[in-house]
Image 1: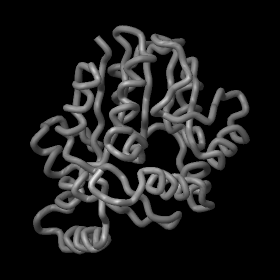
Image 2: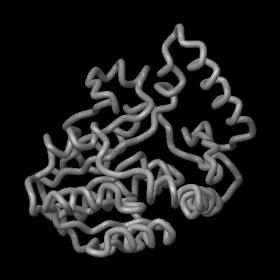
Image 3: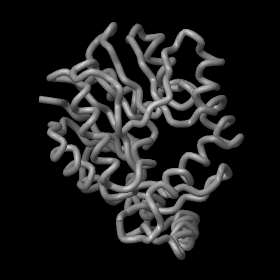
Image 4: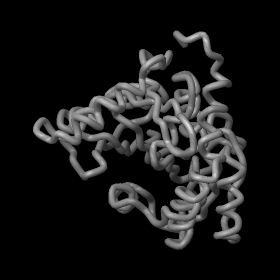
Amino acid sequence: MRADRPAGDVTRTNLANYDSSWSEAQYGERMTGLFPAEAALIAEFFPPPPARVLDLGCGGGRTTAELHDRGYQLVGIDLSERLLAVARARHPALDVRRMDATDLSFESGAFDAAIFSYNGIDCLFPVAARERCLGEVYRVLRPGGIFLVSSHNAPGALLSGGYFYLRGHLNALRWLWQQRGNPHWRDWYWRYDDPGGPQYLYSAPPDRTVAQAARAGFEVLDVRGATGQRDRARIARHEQHVHFALRRP
C-alpha cells in the first residue's frame, strides 16, 4: 500500500457509505431483481437449482431473494448491519449473515456456485484483501463450482461517454477532479462521492482482475461488459462495469 493511511480506515470509510440512510434506500428498497447482465450469466453458467449458492455482499437481499425464488439454496453475507436488517425485514425466509468476505466461516467445498454482484468486491482494501477474498471463494467452492463477480473499470468509465459526447467528457473531468488528494489511485482505488459518503473502490482494467483470479486458481470462462459486450478490447476501453465468469477446476 503506497499511502500512509491505514487499510482499516479505508475499510471503515467504505462501510460507512453502506451503513447510511441513502444506501438503505438505494440498495435496500429501490434496487430489486437481477440486472440483465447478471441474469444472462446466471442462466449460462450457474448450475440448476437447487444448487447451493453463496451470495457475497448481499446487501438488502436484491440478488439473494431473486435466486431464492428461483429455487437455489442461498446463504447471503455482508458486513453492513443496516443492509442486513433490511434484507431480514423484507425477506424473512433468507439466510443472511454478517461475515467478512476475506475470511469465510464455511467448510471447504461447501457451495456449488457463488456471486459477488454490483462490484462489491471493489470495496475490499487493499489489493491483498481482494486477493484473499478470491482465495476464500475458491476454497469454499466444490471442484467445478462457478463464481460470478463484477468490477469497476476506470479507463472504460472515462471513455464510456464516447469521443463526441460532451456530457460524457464533462462527467469524466468531474470524476478526475474528485481524485485530487486521493492517495490510493496508483493502486487503482479511485474515489467515488456518493450521497451516502465517499468510497475508495478498486477500478482497474479488467485484465488485472483476470490475473488475480488466475493466481487464485480460477479458470476464466468469460469476461463481459454490462451491455453484453464480449470483445475484451472494447470492454477495456468503453465499459464501466465488467462481469467475470470464473470456475474452480
